[in-house]
Image 1 (cartoon, rainbow, N blue to C red):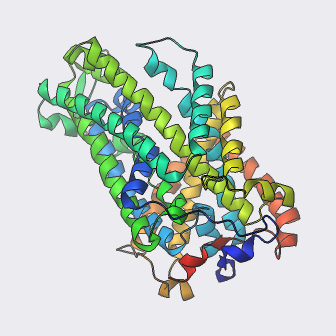
Image 2: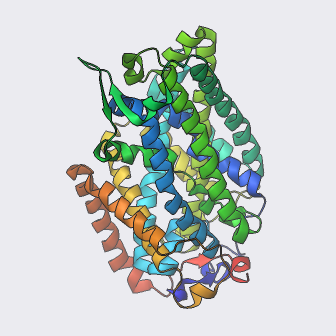
Length: 466
């Protein structure tokens, strides 16, 4: 709805004495480094891919390749919508602008679930990869990572681009080492990549079927997503009309290569099907080389997880900052979350994301993590619907990057996401549905009656002038 397209200056008279704007300080390179760090291809390789090896065996690389291809329509949707509505609010600003204020509010709630739960869950995995050097408690280690990520998130975004860039180089080097070692010890033919071989009582070889691929597709899609971070950074990207799309597409291409090449090498170089199915990549690296190289790779993965924590805190703080600027909360909360620190970062919103995340490291998050899976799928569905509506009326004439094959791309995406959603556990669907009901009640009894003064979704004034 076009009445939500408001300048930032008119959206926050009560929260600050002067307009609060994020600084446009990074280009395509910095934005790509930050976005790649959120994808964390090395973390994907060492944390998510082993689960696929255990269920798909030699078909894992093919499944990931299909997942990367299916992410193309997602990337196209984010590229077009991110240039049409370049806001730190990300998905909720996009959905509010194109599909209505209630739909945008629900998109915000879905993203808020991810904001609060996913970073500490990932941070707790750091201890496993520090084990070759020191044995630490996962909860305390995760809390430490969250605090460190929060402190880094208080810095200038350009500084964080350099910090995360250095860490990113290390994790790409680790992935490269695994790829070189795997190819150097390859003893399977390329044909193994299109067959289904898995260890069990009797190792067997079967052609890959559609159902086999679909069984691991949800994980494969999750493994290659993360490029949406570019949309959250769109208010801080120079020339967002061009650079958001470039950042999204460059991130998808690079992360797909960083993940797929080592997975192919591991599949061809694993000593036997039992080792491949076990998915212990560190053990395979040691078998191909020595313990020193294995330790190096493990430490690089630990740095990759820390890197992801920093970027997620940065991303998530921008979402909360934007919600305060758009008046989602009572006035005192809006005033606090919209404050910018000396480095130009939303420091209160950063603390609100990071500090509770440290405490969540001591909570059993299995159920909540399942809920976030449903929330992410629902969020992408809302984005795909927004993409179908992106060329109505005045939106169709605004300057923006436009995806090819519209509307086939968002329609394909909706079909894929509906399938993934119905495959989720019923208990996770019920939890997410309950949260959605509570959010809808907040909308009905607080936001909607105050529609002239609350939830005034805005885009930056300089973006509207484009």
